[in-house]
Image 1 (cartoon, rainbow, N blue to C red):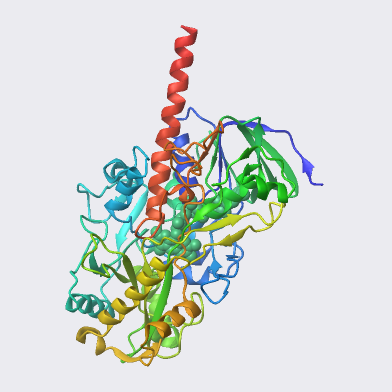
Image 2 (cartoon, protein in one colour):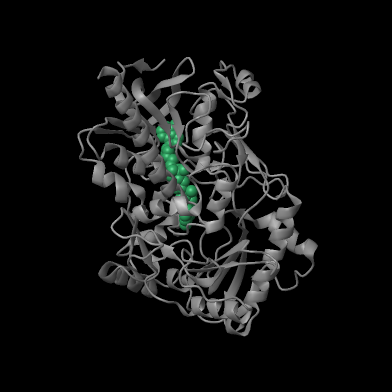
Length: 548
Ligand SMILES: Cc1cc2nc3c(=O)[nH]c(=O)nc-3n(C[C@H](O)[C@H](O)[C@H](O)COP(=O)(O)OP(=O)(O)OC[C@H]3O[C@@H](n4cnc5c(N)ncnc54)[C@H](O)[C@@H]3O)c2cc1C
């Protein structure tokens, strides 16, 4: 039994220093009025490859910074287990992600509002995106400057990306130089959460600024093991650090920001979740909340690999010591070149049918090729285009497998279990092929490598998808915000029926957004922090009235 230490008292305890947690730590301590404890299971972020954009590929398998989860066997993906990397360090997944800055579509947030979440339409959330941002291109109605999250253009155009964008135009789609502008549709370059060729995680953008404040305490290498409950009110957190069990008390609120896998896990471990599941593991039920861990959603991508006619890909740099050295020297001198590239260089948001109002698939264009994410690059010149469906209907779950907090939970997105998702993915693969077979692109295609050009029937294409597809790393919605009986949080992110407890991270999304999920998570934390502070002010005002 690990030793116990005396409980310390804070106003707020935030569990998880990831994309959302670092935002909360900064905003909640800014006034100096509130004492905050930020608890992070991982450690520091001072690793070379965390800061160099290209390094994300090296972090997929690095246990020092990654929880290294994987899914349960996926029934529609040939029973394969799909890797589920998650950041386990300051900055969380924003420290290991692919850096792409994509907010999603305006309609995503309007839909959140339509689902009954007052205050979450695009018009409502836009000020929070703007407040977070330091947009390199300057300020306008849709973009902000001066915020902690640096957003920058890719360092320079690349001939393969230009060919891809031209091919999309030849296929009938517009060029789009701003996926976060008025319309998402079209092909263009991504923007990154980076500045001067270096990653800008939320640890770098938000936490660093707040770290010196006397009212913020950051506990790293500290695993939160239980929410301490006082009846149906959260009153603190128990956590393990250095072989000891610590307890901390929150006089105002406990805020979960552990991400879409760990926030529901911690709730279930604490007696907040589906009663049957909790009993199965000998956990006393505090509240039967069937929605905790339900509704897991994720983007699934199929990666098409191509042999290139010219040695202009990253494969050619990596496998040639002279080019590699030059790329390294260039990066250190100018912060440009191959090392400054994130998980996608160019991309496209397309409609698989002209009858649709907005894009339903996203393409990521990468100037390298490898058999799987994080694997060694091919020795031949190659590139990849992947396709993912933006708004999947398939729903999965996160469920504890044991009462031991150190045991990973069962994660099962249940990819492609909806017929609609299978149909959309197939239409997306056909669309990808249509773009890639345009004249602008074919001059660079020596061979359609995987799948081969001989893979032509719908059945064979779907078989390829089942055998090779993987996550885009966007799990959400396991503590879904809403007003229906299985929603976990209300529109102010308070856990329904439980006092003193909020969830503020990617797990509250009512539905997955049509893009990459970091920007939306940062926005959620910006908005969540305002709600927390507004509620604190309201309590203070009513106390003043009572004593007047
Ligand atoms: C490999 C990868 C690539 C990605 N690429 C992109 C991209 O290019 N663009 C994009 O927009 N999105 C991308 N994403 C997704 C995006 O980064 C996430 O959606 C976002 O970071 C989620 O933020 P979060 O705050 O919900 O969780 P996280 O950022 O994962 O933070 C959760 C934090 O809580 C900590 N924690 C968990 N449990 C406990 C506990 N019990 N005790 C203490 N601490 C705990 C974790 O260690 C972690 O630091 C990617 C993700 C990954 C993993």
